[in-house]
Amino acid sequence: MTIVAPSLLSADFLNLKSDLERFNASNAQWLHYDVMDGNFVPNISFGPQILKQVNSVTDKFIDVHIMVDNPLEAVDYFDGCKVDMLTFHYEAVEDYEQAKEVITKIHQKGVKASISVKPQTPVEVLRPLLNEVDMVLIMSVEPGFGGQKFMHEVLSKCDWLNQYRQQHDLAYLIQIDGGINSVTGEEAVKHHCDCLVAGSYCFNNPKGFSYAVDSLLSLKND
Image (tube, rainbow, N blue to C red; front, side, top):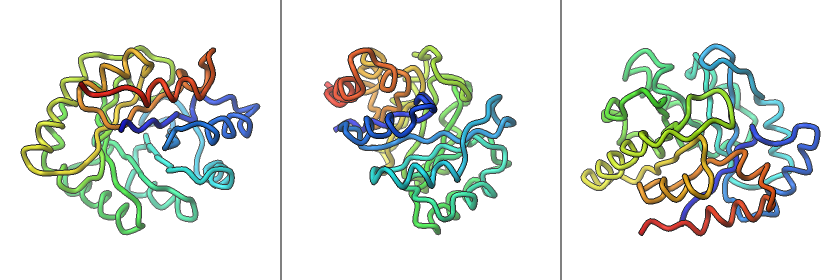
């Protein structure tokens, strides 16, 4: 079954509690929480203090995506927060050894570890790390801002990841983030994505939050 992870970045921050109540009442399994430092990406978002407040009003799976220059250090920022999955960027580490160090540190904290690549980064660079991670996040927009158009060309990365995990008997999830709606979500699922991150489509859907979530949950890989 498809996992739907609404992105808090698209919530109405003047009515955040209300939006979280809509999330809790929906069938969405995960909440996607973006952390941006203004350096790795040209935007700044929320950090651990807001996450602690979010933790207090939801028991659902928390999926944290750190878009920061210093992932090895940033992992420690979330001590004291409930984090179930933590994703960092391949482009933010110096080499494979540092990437493995970040993954090990995440796992030592009892958190699932995930790695992401930007649209222009070939997914094959992750090959030495794929037996270490619990998930791979494919960015289908340039990270940093919500509301961008879906980049269809990244779907070949999802196909490659699926083929690789089958060939090597691996169990990592494939997640996609950026421009997801019912149409692009259907494409992503057909290309073997297990988890859809959807921001504007869920929080700003004229038919309602739960309608948007359910429309994504109903998508099947034929």
